Structures are given as structure tokens and as C-alpha cells.
Image (cartoon, rainbow over all chains, first blue to last red; front, side, top):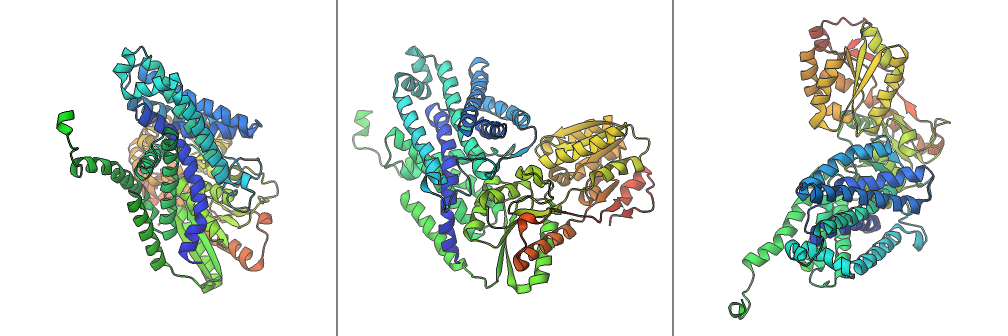
Length: 308
Length: 315
């Protein structure tokens, strides 16, 4: 079989994995873009979601309920970061790092050990690496995760359109102005962090089912993958997608593109030791392009001076 | 921007075309390497050597390295399954779990994976997993290792057990050794560390507490034997190690299994599956039965420890 056919055959797996990370990136989008905070909690809360989902499922809880509990657990981690940041006045990045660090111990205690298997043979899981081929459409991992993405975007679109959602976005745009309008910005920041980490935990719960285990190391470096998805999505679809819902969709697509490229790299047999370096460079380049465009290639608008 | 992406993708495809070379081998075997541990690569090497010896040119290997990242490993497993390889070999717990999640039909063999029951959440009542997974285990006879501590250090009162908290197999080994030692009335203490950053502190504390230190077969420990040796040497605390590699770096003695032989054993299992149509779900997990008592001459002399005659020095 030639490598091209093998790449094409391997794509569905990469798409499913990319969509799961896309959900994680949507969670990150709320803090990174809307609240204007770089929240490093996600490296830990992803595993928290996975651990809670796996342990509760093994304990006999129905899977949907276990996933709801995973989301709640994720929201709690966001709450902790929020309290660190607002109530205790710790800078946002440091607050996230502190929570992430403590979550390592918490996750170990949730699972009781470093790695816990959740086999698709013993449990009726929603998604699995095996549900990529030769399964009915409604069971296909891509279909299931895509449904999650669509519902999630619909809920977020509605939420950020409500009065409260608008005040949350205002908090991220201009903190002082929002406070002047009588918005409780500290409260909003905490709610935003909770929402974000809840979504990240949901993606962790899906990922654990997809790969068949939860591992205490699984969220390590998640923030870079999430940022890569946001940035790639914005760079590729930014011109076409203006609506908020489509912007979130672009983030999910960003995750898919990231993993397709990753899969091609693996199919080509490039030394995977270099992968982390490559992905960091991809993110750096995508981050630099808008800046270079502005600095070196921008044409001054006509009449710019008069309007200024 | 779309253009740039499409150019990159197109370029990737062109490289793929030019790199495309088809092999004429009858059997293709995907090797999913996850860990960076020396012992594990020895096992993989043994596996490849045994199969090449048996099948010659009929077998071709696709070795891909996930460098300790579950996401890469998932994509690699996905790649192997779509290529419909004849067999997948895994070198540790995580890669075994991912491969088992990726396919229910392609045989999955583990080379030197410690604990199959915990990795796959199955019962090993009949010594086989009952699913498309089997292999060899690098589980050293833990009771005999614990016995070794008593044999060499009959006066030891406190034994320190050091392990990395992110490695599930290490905890398993520590618990077994601890159980045995406690039953002999020796007090034990666990010293867990998170990663190589706080390893030194854990070893330092362990040295204060213990007469003897036991190190399990643990990836992080295997990578950091130098620093462990520095600390234990100064504190004059002897170390009993779970395997040869760690022992040669910082230990006095070990009851070592041979990872290369274990890999060869896995290779023979693969041969049975590929050519003789053996049913993998009924193949029992195999262990290394020929453990050898080994000791580190240099460190033993420095500490003034005389080992019994049946110990072989590590070269």
C-alpha cells in the first residue's frame, strides 16, 4: 500500500482526535480570547476530567452521568484558579500554574495510581479508537464528537448572547470600563474560568474513552495544543468566519488541522522526537504572521490622518 | 493563509510520493515504541532479531517512536490499524492500552510490559487475557528481590522504597516488596517523587531514614542513576535495584531479568501467531524464568560489602 493511501485511510482517526482536542481548544478560547487570560489550569483539569469519568464509570455509574460529574470537577478546578486570581490577588498565569501543580496530586488521588484503564470491551463507551471504521454512523467517533462540538457551540452562542454573557465578554475586553458599568468583574472572571475548565474536562473525559485509559501525564502540554488549534483556526478561517459561533467552529477545525498535519508527519516517518519542537514552531509562526502583516505589509488607510 | 496551508499540504504529499517504497515482505509488523528506556529498546531489539532469524526477508518492521507522548502514540496506532499490519508490538503499558483500544482484531503483543491485568482491566485467571492481546512481562520475581535484601543485609531495620508517582508499575512493585518485608518484621517507608526535578530530594530523605534502599524497575529512576549514586555514595546507603541497568548505575545488587531474551521470547510468540495461526487470546503471558543474581563490583567494594559466591559481577 502506498503511503498516500495510508495517509488518506488514517485521516478519520486524526479527525476524531483533532475534534476532541478542538473541544478542549474551545474551552481555552473562552479564557484566552474572551477573558484575555492565559489559563494554565487546563494542563491539569484535562486529566481531572478524564480521571473522574474513568473512575466513576468503573465504579458503576452510567457513562453520561460520569461525564457530567467530570465537567463539574473541571469547573471546580476553574473555581480554584479563579479564587487564587481574584480573591487572593495572584497573577492569572501563576494562579493557573499553582492549580495545575496541585492537580497532579489530586488526579493521582482520584485514580489511586498513575494510570487507569477503561476498556471499550468491558464498558459501553461513547467514543473509541475502534469506532472509526465499520460501525454505523451514529456510533462513529467522528459523528459523536462532532455532535458534541455542535451542541457545545450552540449552548455557548446562546450563553454569550444573554445579558450576563455580554457582561462576561465586556470583562475581558475592558476590565476598568466594565467595573465602571457596575459589572462584578471578579465574579465574572471566576465564572469564565469555571466554564472554560468544565469544557476542558469534558474533552478529557472523551479523550480517556477514545484512547482507553486515563493517565496522570495526559494533559501535559495541553495548553500548547489548544493554543495551536485557536491560532491555526483563526489564521485559516479568520477571513471567512466572522460570526461568534463560526469563530468557535474555526477553533475546532484548527484542532483537526493540527492533528491531520501531525498524522501526515507520522505516516511519513519523520523522527517524532522532533514533534514537540515542530509544533512549537508552527504556533510561533502562526502567531507571528498577523504581527508581521501589521508591521511590514500594512498599507495606511486613505484619510487615516483626518479620521484619527 | 488558506493558500499557504494548501501549499504545505501539497508539498507534504509530494514528499510522501517520493518517499513511497513498497516492501514485498509477507508479514508487516508495526512496532509502537513509547518509552525511551534502554531496557525497553533492548526488548524490542530482541523481538526483531528473533523474528528476522525465523522469517528472514519475509518480515518487515515499521518502527515508530512516540517519545513518551500519548497523542503521538494514538496517531501511530491509528496509522498501523489503517495499514492493516499483521501484528502490533508495544513496549509499555500506555502503548499496549492504546493499541488494544485501536483494534479488536489485529494481534497485539507486549514486550516487557509489567502488568497486563491492570493495563487492560482484564482478569488473568487463565494466564491469558482472553482478547487479542498477549506478550511477555518484565515483572521480576519481586519476592526473591525482597529476599535478596535480607540475604545481603540481615541487620537492616529500615528499608526505603523510592519510586516515581507517575509510573503505575513502579507502585505495583513497591507494594509487593513492601508486603514481603513487612511480613518479616522490617519497617518500610515509601518515598515518591513526581519527576526528575524532585528525585534528589526524595533520595536524600530516603537516605536519612533507611539502612537499605530498594529501587523498582522505573523509567525515571533508570534515567537518573547518576544523581542517585552521588547521594547514596555520600550517605553510604546501599541500593538494591529492580533490574540490571539501574544496578550498574547506582546499585549494589539486583536479581535481573534479561530484556533482550524477553524480547526474543516475544518474537517467538509472534512467529507462532503469524505462521502457525496460534490463537493470541489463549496464549498465556510469559515471564523470564532465568533470573540471575548480579552485583556491581565497584560499588560493593566501596561500601565494603562481600556478596555470596553465586552473584555474577555486572560488566
